[in-house]
Image 1 (tube, one colour):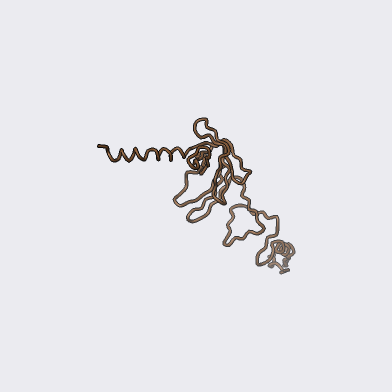
Image 2: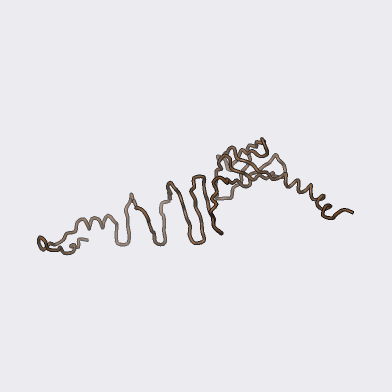
Amino acid sequence: MSNPQNVIRRLLQPILDRIAAGIARGYVHLVRNSEGLQTLQLELLRAELRDGVEHFQPYGFEAVPLEGAEALVLHVGNSRDHPIAAVVTDRRHRPTDGTAGMVGLYDDQGQVVRIYRDRIELASSTRVQVVAPTIDLDGDVEVAGNVTATGEIDDTAGTLAALRTAYNAHTHVSAGPGNPTSGPTPTA
């Protein structure tokens, strides 16, 4: 009499083999990013070079993998004639110091955007540029370096240029040599 587990395993094995044949791992050789859907040239099995493999990315996200990145490839209908790259990752550059619940974006240069439970952190060793006609910040702003402006600085009391003009034009009344001066005479 046959063992029931062996019978089930023997019956399921062809199905499991088909599922396994539909999944592959590959390495990126080339990226074409100029069409509506990015395509990759991948090396799948040893010396199996596949060109034009569609790389599906979530809506609103974009990544252009580097050569040598790893891909998880699914074969549609279990046909090796129609591979798609479901996920591409690059363990050479993935940060490994994340915390539970954190979400992040990263690149190969160490630039990182991280959403933590208590803050959002943006890190770059080069430059961060925000391009918009207006940027609204609600809350206090703390700057640990210099602030440079090419336009006017304005608040509820007026512009910095107007304050500078008033300051530069003010005078003090002197009681004579060696005596203290009075406060500035208001000019604004």
